[in-house]
Length: 634
Image (cartoon, rainbow, N blue to C red):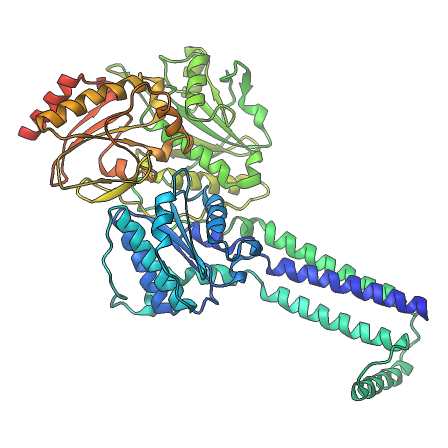
């Protein structure tokens, strides 16, 4: 009897642990906030007790902030369960903001605000948040869902004001809360799916069965139940079962430990099934329904052309001097781009999107090979493709292939990629091919000259690659394909400065802007030219001409550290401010078609003059003053 009782207790404990583990797996959703904030600007859990009207009001404020040049996403964490599996960060808004911002970094690198009952957290990848934290220190968080909503609104307004973008205080618009709610309450939907109903049913049934089995085995072992009515009811059920049992053929006895062990096995099988379905799923479900809204109406994005047939094989030399053939990557999906090794216009957008696409596939990125073929007939050396790879942070992320001019021309012809030289300028089709693991041509995309569409192109490539991989992996990004509007000179905006704080741009006074990226070093002495522009700044102040503002195109920089590292190599301190365009919207709105690029704007926010340095060269200080005076007088 004692042995049986010990087996009973051990088996029931194992069964209970298994079901408990299954239950925790069902509840754990990693970080629900990151699931939602990759594709919208507000996360509010369904159980936050926040009125729909307040969610709509906050959503409208965030939309207005974005339109005004202060994009920010907000996560409201009302209770510990809103953190999913990372409950250790409850009551730690600053730590959670860093965690969540890092999770979102593949799809979103802008400002992130976290609101908890005990305070705020702020994160902005690659930027100092010291000033913003000081602003938030003066803000108060009220109680309940309404208090959290009010605190979030006040914090967003305070941060925007500190950045030079004051936001008007507005109430809920006239549109009905029900109609407007999806934009603001989608976060609640995003977090409510974390425990599937079928899994709850399975867990409940397993708990009931194990509980009943434990009671029956306890009675057989002679364990006395504490309550007399319960014992009488169970005896009656036992007698009823015994009478029914006499009508049935005899069955072999099953030891109690075997019975409970069976429940352990069933619970474990249910856990495995849930894990497989939740993590991998069926091929179609795993990748999720591809985002297509707005794709056909987005002039900044090519939706791709479907191809058939086999991808022509070739063998060329990579940046390390090694021979590489296309067919050597059979078994992997290939993203193949034709790239000018000295290009400062569309090619950097292509390669940035390629890197984004692979990153969006997570661990499945190991099944993807990024390849580039040099499309510059005047820069075909191994050193040329090595330099491009290094400056764009891609040295070990892809194979950039080159060869003799005749070899390259053969590959260009095989893929119908046109390459021409016009007035010493290289023109080529910015083609990106997706090739299946068995070597078939799947899709052709043409990169458009739009900095703000780089992430969208990356997602488009990732979704196509996911569709051709046998495992059909999920794509971590859920960006909308709706065309992103540029921020024009007529719109007041605030950009982060490399030195900290924010830089106001837009109308109000005539200004001269220089757009650049650190990888411009490949074609020009960028550092020396930036230092030379100190001379223009001094002359402009003295002569009353528009002063200079430099803007680094952060949307296509290899990393957030690229700019500070580069500026650290200069021998002179720059006398003009340097802002960072992380979204690409400013470059698009100011008509930038390559780097470096000079733009003169009027006080009313009109573009008066522009200059492409990569083709026309750097103007001297005197020439620049002359161009500016002529444009102002026109």
